[in-house]
Amino acid sequence: MKNIKTLFSLATFILMLVAASFSLAEEVAVELKPGHPQQYTVVKGDTLWDISGMFLKKPWYWPEIWHINPQIENPHLIYPGDVLKLVYIDGKPYITRSKYGKRTVRLSPETRIEELDRAIPTIPLDIISPYLTRNRILNAREYSQLPYIVGINDEHMSAGADNSIYVMGIPEDSNDAVYGIYRRGNAYKNPVNKKEILGYEAIYLGEGTMERKGSPATIYVEKSKAEILKKHRVIPINRDKVIDTRFMPKASSVKRSARIIGVLTSGMQPGVKMVGAMDVVIVDVGLKDGVESGDVFNIYKRGPIVKDPLRVNQKVKLPNELNGNLMIFRPFNRLSYAIVMDAQSTLRVGDVVKSPFISE
Image 1 (tube, rainbow, N blue to C red):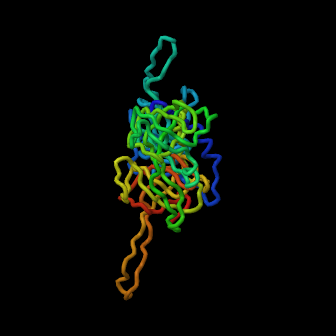
Image 2: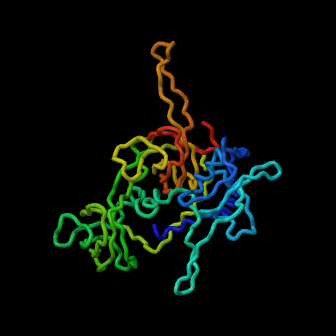
Image 3: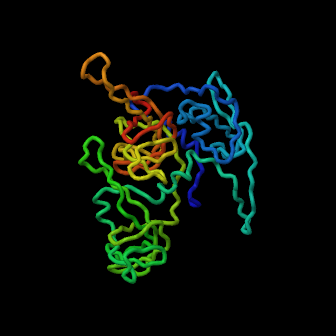
């Protein structure tokens, strides 16, 4: 998205990591990855997570070994062309930026200087951007209170781009000019108590602008990506809002385990249970549990139940095995969107996620 800022502040990252505390945590020694490079030149398309994974077994401990050079302009940002070197200071490994890449600038007619080579992001923004700006999760009460479509211009059964729709429930004193149009998607249930619904996915269908206030109000649909029907809901959106994508990965301080309960990645068919690296998933942990954007969790592949070869009619549950990790990028009240950063083998809906501070 053009409005998304990808600049990542390692300085803030470090301050937040130092400030964070977790009662179960022990001091963790940063482990270098076997076969790590001695130096690496940053290229366009890199992410901080990928580069961290070249040097470290646990990429989210990058700030522990990042050596800031205060003599370098913007020392907290990493750009394509920068050369990163592994050095040792007092026996401890550090990554330092030994030279910085060429910065291309241009002068606009207003004589404003603009950097064309932007700092690399933490994670792939092209994968998660639709889930940052469009789809969202709402509880039943939130969804039921949204304004809804009661009619479509010319008595059409459905609407698309360049149609007008009539909406009930928008306050006449509202100053909102742009509205997203949504339908209710999957109900996400508590994996322990199947009768409890944790939230509903609100699926983005399109958006439009206010033409006329009233009851009903008239909204002109400017663009649509799916069929728009009566009963679908509208939510005000701010096109000028800048989404903060300066994710600051850190080991989550949430003490309870959670589960992957859904897969969202574009192109996935309904009911898909298999999960892999770079898939966007829903986990049943959220703001209510203390989750923050950037929280990293380990993923454990569920151990199967097998027959005991010696005891008749006895079965044994094999241990869960560490199989990857994910990062929360958009938490809601009781659920969160997360991206699977690493997966050693195929994961499944239902697999357990836990803070790296909690052993299985």
